[in-house]
Image 1 (cartoon, rainbow, N blue to C red):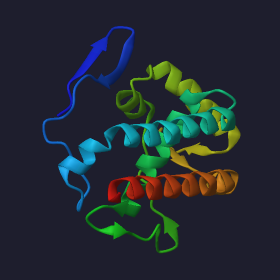
Image 2: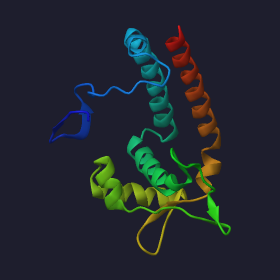
Image 3: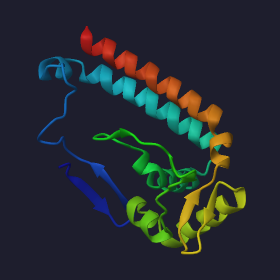
Image 4: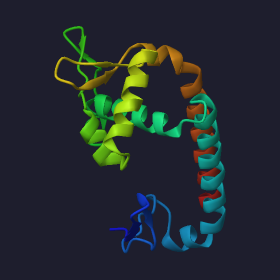
Length: 172
């Protein structure tokens, strides 16, 4: 388990030391991983900075809105793929089976104040990217698939490219 340090102003947990059981990809020796850690760090830094920049631009600087939408979409679609079962169909009897979530659960997971989450939810509803259920829960709409198609394709390409770079470093 990562140890974290929290301060009243920083609700997000930031790792302060490495986990005791370092997870290394199958087929890579701990020595190889350790000897390339600096290059791996640079590749990860470039990938993450590029992703954050793209999200910042796509959401007009509102990374909180991005995070709230991402949490909703992740929760809604979590049953469609898991590591044990793999891909699962997105619909049952022609109906999409999303797992809805509410403002409190988003606030709890992200550390974003509940009132801020509620304002972001209202904005996302206005944009037509999510909808509110009769039970005060939220689900993504089909519109985000259209709105974010090119963005997602670009992100996927960059992820795969970075993955190839990491693989090349670890095989050298």
